[in-house]
Amino acid sequence: MTEKEKMLQGKIYDASDKELVRLRGIAHRLSAEYNNTFEDEEDRRKDILSKLLPNMGEGTYLQGPIQFDYGVFTKIGKRSYANFNLTILDCAPVTIGDNVFFGPNCTLATPMHPYLPEERAMYDNGDGVLRDREYAKPITIGNDCWIAANVVICGGVTIGEGCVIGAGSVVTRDIPSGVIAAGNPCKIIRKVTEEDSIYNKEALF
Image 1: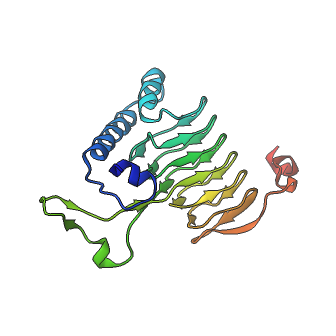
Image 2: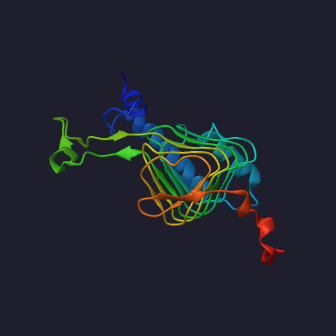
Image 3: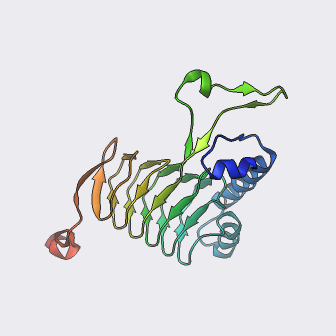
């Protein structure tokens, strides 16, 4: 089993593996290139994203700046949108549905590290290269979610369809479909209902 296969299957892997270093280097370079473009450079942006995020649906827009660890292990559906400073550490698969909105400064972090300090510490395997023991857990976000500003979603989390995750939340556990959830740690507040329609808010019109 290669180190990439171990990583994607949630096993302890060697992040210093040459193939993984190469893939991260490509993603980091493409992220930097994207961040140096302007909004009216549509063709250039599209070309960069086709390499960085080959599994991105039509109509999805990333404001930038962005940062991806690999990119190729992230799948984003159609018509989704991310505001400034989206960071996705996709050491495990990240799956984002259609019509998902991200506010600014959102982070999706799949990597996990040991809790015991002696297991978490960097070590030399005898070849002079410092490495750590790392593994990763996937993240899934269903269709039609709004992930508000400054949200952190941790590895192993699944967020169901149609959810609103309140600003500043840290999501450490699964969130079922159709709810408003917020806090650190993020907890369910209530269901989303028809009473939440903007057309019930006269002040908006």
